[in-house]
Picture 1 (spheres, rainbow, N blue to C red):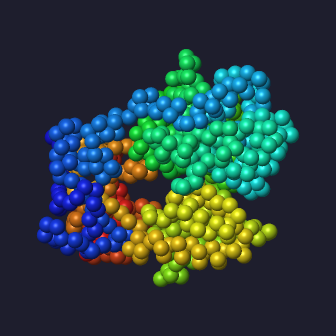
Picture 2: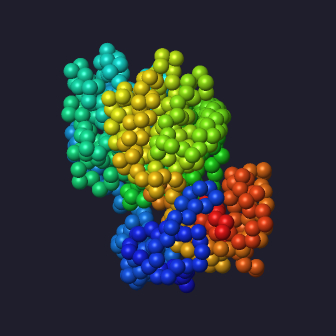
Picture 3: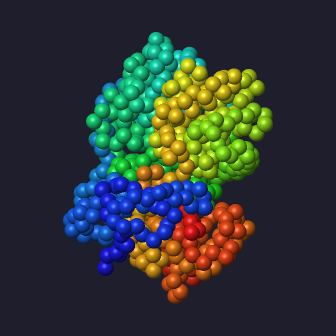
Length: 612
C-alpha cells in the first residue's frame, strides 16, 4: 500500500511555502511568514503540483510520498523518475566523444605513446584532482604508456593552486612533450601559451570554467563539460575526476578490458564526485556514485584502496557518507596539511604492508587536520558571535598563519561559519610575506566567482565554483576586498536571503512512519549535493522525554502514546534549557532505520526544532 501524504494545500509546481510560527493551518492559498527554528534557520514547506503528482503516480505506479520528494528534486517526467530510481552505470554514461576536443586528446595521447614522448599529469591537491590524476596515469600506462607518464601535484604551501609557469618550465627542461591536467588549467591562459612556446602540448581536464569565460586558446585540447568545449554535453555537473573518467573511456574504446577497467576506476570517481560536492542528482553523476558504492562494497581492491578502507573503518555496505566523511577527508588531509604526493604513493603501493603504512600516514594527517580545524573554528565562531548583530552580508575573516590560521583548513572552517550565520564567508591565512591565501563558501544566490570577479583588480588570483572558491591577495587589500564583496552582495542579496534555509519535502506525523516507509525513501539514496536526504515537517508533536547523550547530543521521545519515536539531535546540548518544561514541539527531521538486537524500528534525525 502506498504511504499517504498529509497535504496542507496545493500550490504551483516547486513553489516553496514559508511557514509561520506553526500555528494551526491557514485557509487555502494564504501566504505565510517565515519561521525560524532554535538553530536560527528559516523553515519552509515545498509544495508540488497535485496534477503532476497524480500523473506520475499513474504512469510509474510509485508511492506518492516518494514521487513528491522526486518532484522537489526537479523530476517531472515518468522517464526521469525511472532513470533516477534505476541508475545504470554503463547505460547512463554519456558518449565521451560528445566533448568537443575528446577526439583530438585521444589522438594526441596515442601519438605520444607511439613516439615515446614523456607525458606529465599535473593535478590539484584535493580529492577530485588526486583521484583524477590516479585515473589518468593508470589508463595511460595500461594502453602502452608505462615508463612514459609521471605525476606532479603542486605543493599548497610553496607553489599554490594550479598549473604554474614554473611547472611548465621544469617540464620543458625534462623533455616533457605533453602535459595533461586534472582539476586545474581551465584559467591557465598564460601558462598554456608558455607551454606552446616551449614545444609542449597541453590537454586540460577540468570543470571549473566560470560562466561567461572560455577556455585557453593555446591549449591543444580542453575536456570540460562547460563553455565551448562542453557545448551539447548533457552533464554540466561532472566532477574533474569524472572528466578523467571520460578521457579514460575514450582511450579504452575498442579495448576488450574497457568495461572491467571502468568498473575499477569508478570507485575513485565516486569518492571524488561526492567529496567535491557536485550535483549527484544528475543522472550520469548518480550512476557513477551508485556504481562506485556497489563496487566499493562488492569488489576486490587495489592494496592502496583496501588499506584506506581499513584505516577509515569502512566495512559492510559503503555509503555516500562514508565517501564524504571518512575516505574523502583522509585523502584531502595530505594536501591540506603536508603534500598530496602521499595520496599518489598510496594508490601506487604494490603490497598491503606498504599500503597500510601509507594509509596510516593519511589517517594521522587527518587527525592533525581535525585538531587544527577545531581550534580555528571555535575561535572564529566566538569572534562572530561577539560581533552580533552582524552588519556585513559577506563575512571576510583573516589572521596570521603563525597565529593559527592554517591555509589548509580555512575552507572547511568557512563552511562552519556559513552554517552558523547563513552568510557567505571567506577566511584568509596571511603568511610572513604579507600574502593572504583564502577560501570561501557561499549560500544560494551568491555566486562566489562572480563576487571575486567584481574585485579582480584587488586579488592576485582566484578560482573555484559558485559555492566554493579559493583566492590569493595581498593582506593590505583585505579590507578593500571586504568592502567590494559587500557592495556586490548589496546588489544581489536581500536581508531575506541571509540565514540558513531548510525546506521540508512534506508534512508527516510520527505515526505515518514504518520501517517499510523508510526503506521506500531510501530508494532515493545516495544522498548529497543536489539530492539531500528527505526532510519532513512534524508539526506540534508531543514531547515525552528528553535525554542527554555523551554531554553533547539530545535524544527526544516524540509522538502520541504507543506510537512515539526516538529522535536524535546531534551536537545540540545548548538547546537543552529551552526544552525544559516543554510538552509539544515541531521538528524538521529525516527518518532512519535503527537496528538493535535484530529488531528494526524507525527513529528521527533532527535537523532543527521549533518551540511554539
